Amino acid sequence: MKKFLTILFVLTGVILYAQHESSSIGLRGGGVSGMTIKLVDYDLSAVEIIVGYQRGGMRLTGLIEKLKPIKTDRIANLYVITGLGAHAGYVQYRKRKTKTVDGTTYYSNQRVYAPIIGGDLIIGLEYHFESVPINISLDYKPYMEFFGEKIFRIDFWDIGFSIRYVLNN
Image (tube, rainbow, N blue to C red; front, top):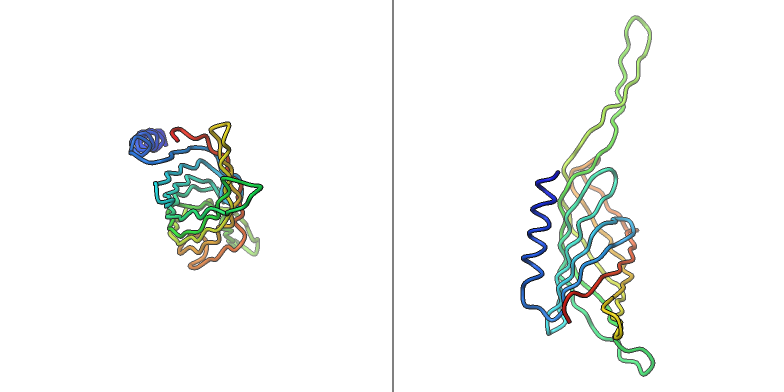
């Protein structure tokens, strides 16, 4: 685990050093909660990486997004986010085993780790504050995954709220 976290922080530093219009790092709370890194280009296309925790496991999600500004007179810096991506990781679950010896049934729970891989969609709203280097977003991110506890699984209810600190603007 220490090696993974070290690699993650080094990789984060390398990614954030790249020349982008805006780089931000923060936290996401929701169905999949964890750390989020977002890199936005000049043409308002973005790459978001989420290292999240869910169902006793961990996953790495990569999303390619497009930000579209909402033109209003009252609210500036409000964007609609759309995009797609993929994730990989593992989940943990308990598998119940039964064993009958001399007419007596014994039950035990076994902890099982299983790999997952899947696809993600994202749609949401993001607001960039002008006076402070913070942006917030509310997103809806349904996904499907293969393997894990079941061979195929779809989750339509991954709604998340993110708050990020903008490193460069």
